[in-house]
Length: 375
Image (cartoon, rainbow, N blue to C red; front, side):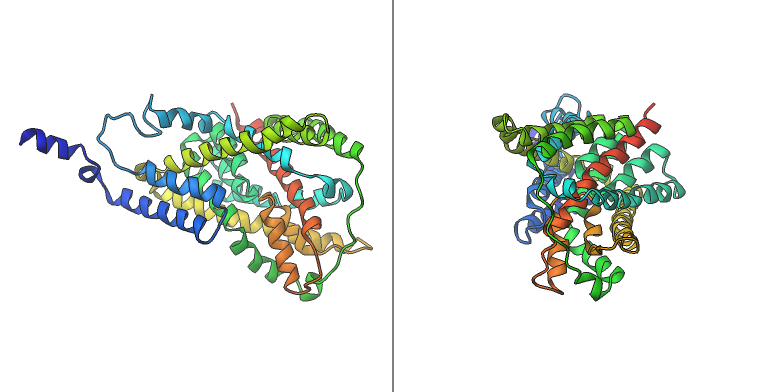
C-alpha cells in the first residue's frame, strides 16, 4: 500500500496545479487556432503543443523540463537561449525573400524604418512602468512583429523574459489580420485606399546580387550589433540570387528553416511553465507588445501619408502598414484590405517592399540595443 501511495504521488494528477491547467488550456486554444482558423499554423501549432508539454506536471527532481539542467528539452532550449536558432531562421528567410520590389523602390525603405517607431516608443513605455533598460529593449522589439529577432535580442539582454516575449511576438504575428485592418481603416480615407500605383520596374540580376552585399555592409556599419541577424539574412539571399548555389539556397529555405522553426517554436512553447509565466510581468509584456505593434502599424501608415505631401506620384498609404516585418502576412493583409475598396487594385508587390525593409529595420534596431546595453 505504501508503494502504491508513493507511485500515485509521482503521477501528473498528484502534481497538477490550477496554473498548469490554465496554460494547458491556452496551449489547446493555440493548436485550435492553428488547425481550424489557420492562424500562422507553422508557428502556432508547435508553440501551442509546446505549451501543453511544458505544463505537464511532474515530480520535483525529474530532469524533464526546459529549465532542468541536463534534460533533453533543456538541450533543445539551449538553441533558443544561446541565440543559435534565430540566425539560422534568418538564413532561411533570406533564401526565400525576393528584394526586387525594395530595390526598384528604395523610398520604401523609409516606410520600413518609420514602422520601427513602435519599438522605441514601447521601450520608453516599458521603462516608465518599471522594467530595466535591457528588459525594455527586449520588450520593445515585439513591435517589429519579428519573432526570431525578438527571441535573439531577449536571449542576449533579458533571458529571464524570453518565454513571454517570444509568445507575445509570435502571437501578434499570427494576429496580423485581426490587429492591422482597424488601424488602417482609422488612419486612411477611402480615397487614399483606392490610390493605384504603377507596377515596380524590372530589376536586373546584377542589382539582385549586389543588394545583399551592399545592404549588409551598410547595416553593419550603422549598427554592428546587427551583424549576426542581417549577415545571415543577406547570406541566404545571396545564395538565392547568385544563381550558382541553388542547392544551398534550397537547403537553407527548406530543411534548415523548417527544422529550426519546429525546434524553436516548440521549445519556446515548452518554456511557458505556469510558475514562470503566470505573473503580472507577463501580462505587462503582452500589453506593451500589443501597444508596440499598433504604434508600428500607425507609424508606417502616417509616414506614407507624410511622404505623399512631397511626392508628385502618390503612393497608397496602406503599404506603410506593411513596414512591420511580419513577412509576408502583413503585405497580404494590406493587399486584401485594399481590394475591399477597389477589387482591381493589386498592392501585394508594392507592400512587399516596406515589408522586407521592416525585416532589415527591426534587425538593425535590435543591433542598436545590443550595442548599447550588452555589457
